[in-house]
Image 1 (cartoon, rainbow, N blue to C red):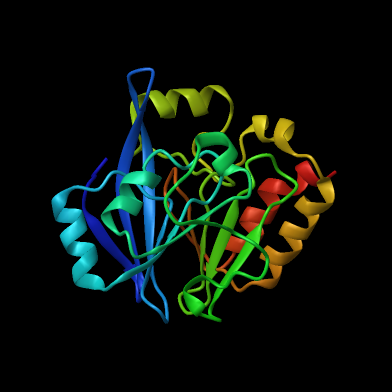
Image 2: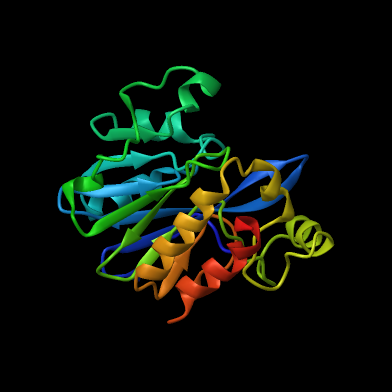
Length: 229
């Protein structure tokens, strides 16, 4: 897999491919950068090198940094230190888990990222990881961290093997273990209804191949339908 290069996906949308280590094995990881009315938004920070930081600063001023759920926080503090003037947005329970983060603010229903009406969000409150997804209306792009995977041939060997073993390799899907994190099935149904209502043509997730399809919304909804029963 390529890494450490920021690539333009669409107007106002960029991605940085990276990785994390687990038990000595690499796992794919992706940060999404959005241009909003107030500046740049970084969704799910990854490790940034000097070249990445210079590239981001050339794109504009970072105004918002989003830790999307209770799992994607490994590189949050370094990112906040790099861009100290940005708003830092976190799930309600994250600070209880990892301790204080300078300037961190809780993602609440009334928060509008980037003061941009074209940036929609949905927080899956009925799931233990409390993930907030973002829909970028202009590019019709849905951005998620862990609520959908799409592991394909370009991923790292260990992660391909693991997700093949649990039946999640080669297609967009939700890992079976998410079932144990669902606290409220009505919130899953609400998520599905919301996704179907948005005209999604692309899904950028933190792990796996980006989905480009006019049926992207239904693909996501179909992956979750059994968790709502």
